[in-house]
Image 1 (cartoon, helix red, strand yellow):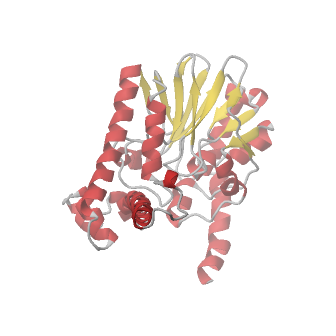
Image 2 (spheres, rainbow, N blue to C red):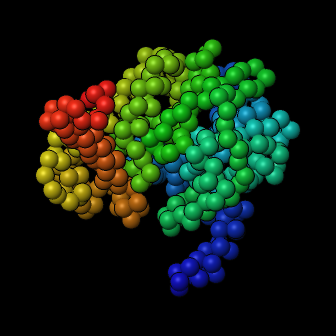
Image 3 (cartoon, rainbow, N blue to C red):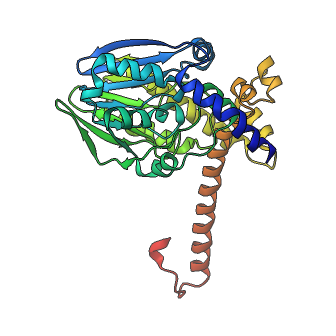
Length: 346
């Protein structure tokens, strides 16, 4: 209770001030990798330092498509810079729609700005709407780095999003978190990948990550043969071979983790012991973080390797339970062929 009052009395005024006058100055980099797509990248010294260790993880990146659609809105601390940039680009008069690839605050942090400034409609996967309308209080480091989560109304995405010159297909790609989507433009084979990729070997994840679903989503996207990949943290890959190589690297990394979870989870042990076996790393950071990785150190274990290990562990036991149930049904049928058990279930 004391912590809540301190947060209310001290943090709330600070947060309101920082949205207008950031503690660290931001810079804005604008590029146009392909026709109709403008990349707005906002960062500062702190996010650049973190990104150096996290594989490009902490940039606020928005993609302006056909001058009318904004894919993601960055984190709240970037509000002032994003507002100024959109005014300079003329986006205030042209943007009508916002699509969030998922509900994390570094992708939705300025939805309220777009609603107020552009009267834009915000669209997200239906599974992400509760988190958008009723955002949870963030852990301290996320509030400090990105700003507090903002409440904003949102509507469910349909099968596609249309602009004046293009149609973007909505691809369900859960794994990084529930309700994650990618946008795919089939003519030029452009993929707005959200956090499907991030980095090929980023091993620490939040607790809402699901490794098995992530693998399925990567396999689904690989079938599309994208020729451009626009990552939600600023990484751009061009060419079908380059995109496939990076997505395959990510897929192989996750499959390796899954295989090692299956291999080493044959007996009772703590999740920390299992995680150390799965990753089998022995550097100083691994020692200090008890095998959970450097992101675990700076996030109080909110980001950790064991989160992704747990998701594969859940999959393993689901499969084992299905097998056991099928064997029980088969054994019962063999003992009593006249049983009411439907043979089609075997």
